[in-house]
Length: 125
Image (tube, rainbow, N blue to C red; front, side):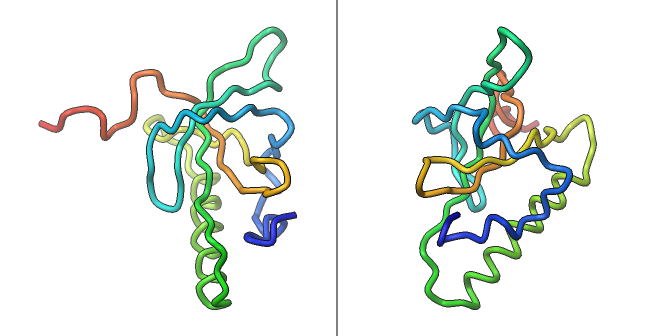
């Protein structure tokens, strides 16, 4: 378990743990609030398919200040809870969560890959 983030405190009863089922590449796609997005493959999908997925790895720096660490955990937990509770055609579903990079156990959110890019890659009118 990670010393940087209390992974076991996340509200995950309805969120699958995909830690052993994903392969994360080093191809950085973008950065956002509290994380970086990488391309990956879902190895645990249906037989003979390994769909491309987006993996949002949470940026965690060692927070020695307990108040800041608790605030960061609260924000990440809130994002996860919100994402799990929203179902809308314009919001990507959360496929699961995962621990990335073996021993470092960095938490990540896993969602479907959108081939045509994100909303910010389209021009505004």
